[in-house]
Amino acid sequence: MNCIDVYKECVDNLNPSEELINKLLRRTEVKTMRFSKKKMIVLVAVACMLVGTTVFAAGKITGYRSWSSNLTTESDINISRDNAGKLGISLEIPEGFSTGYSFNNSNIGGTEGLDENGKAIAEGKSFMVKYSKAGSSDVYLNIDPSFEPLTVEDGCSSIDVNGTTVYIYNDIYKFVPPDYELTEEDKENMEKPGYEISYGSDKVEVMKCDGFIFEYDSKIYNALSFDSELTNDEWCLMAKDLLGQ
Image (cartoon, rainbow, N blue to C red; front, side):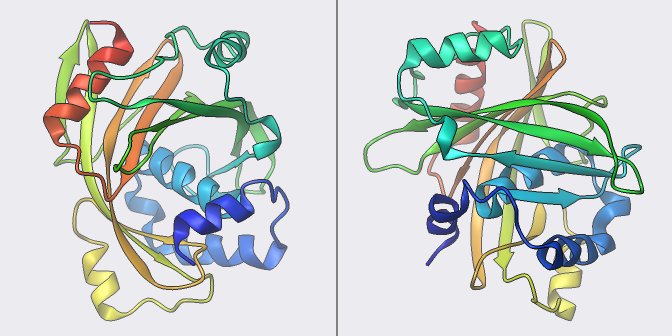
């Protein structure tokens, strides 16, 4: 079973065990001092797809909890746009992109910012949109509340779209089981820009994760795809589609 299969089975599991959450917290502790907001948003999006609910530490808010459920899945683009509008999302949800990707479905989730005691001190609704293209990896557009200013690590390229800075990233994710012990090679790789380890899969699996991220009207927009053949130029084109250029 790969990580996408895990997502399909676990997305409506909103209550992972306390042991799993504690392991996630312990395993990510080695990286918390280096996390940028961009890494945090991407990791939360990935982990949410893997285990339904998870917690990571970062920034002034010491942790985030994010979740989604297929009980809110909507395959009608018009209803999805209405749902997005009710959540205060000001950019229109595209029916498709000029790269050939078309709207598949959407669902509603949530994100909380946690203090050092695990108490929610900020919260808001999240929105995930899935786009598909025959013969290609799916693209996931995650729209989350912006609790803190967006920051990214060195090495991300960027473009300006109508005054909005869009960051393009090309990361490598190693998905591992919750009880996985980091090797010396893992620790060395984690020091490299764009290399992340995410807990929650039932086997070790390495995947490429590409996409873009930007902040607009108090929301973080993060589009990503696993093992996609999309080029950075195509990601830029999709960001321009979303921002209406």
